[in-house]
Amino acid sequence: MGNKSRPKPTVLIADDDLEILTMVRTLLRRRDVKLIEASDGEEAMRLIRENTPNLVVLDVMMPGMSGWEICKAIREDGELANTGVIMLTGIGERLNEMTSPLYGADAYLDKPFELTALDEAVTRVLSAREGA
Image (tube, rainbow, N blue to C red; front, top):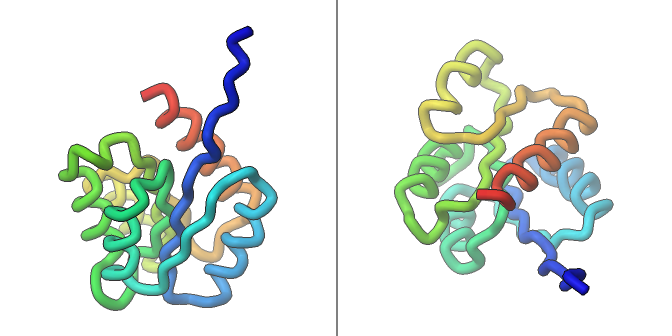
């Protein structure tokens, strides 16, 4: 039969806000994923290069590198071509709406966000990238 089990998707969360990190972690633990966490931009970029995650959930404003810089670096790296990116930001809806797509983000949510909206974005981006 064609029922070979797929490896669990790897998801990296990068946010310097512990409350958001905990919230996103709690949501993602309900899924069958391998979870990696970073609390600043440089650590996130190092972990992304080491683990080639299927999905990265990035805060825009972080110490070291911003989420936008990380997203741009992901999009410029051929090894990471299938990595999905969801941007989380508290900088304001209009700015996020205009800026995140410029850097190649697959989805973006404004803080504070509903967990169901994040859950839907994770599902959408993972399945879109799986077929890529």
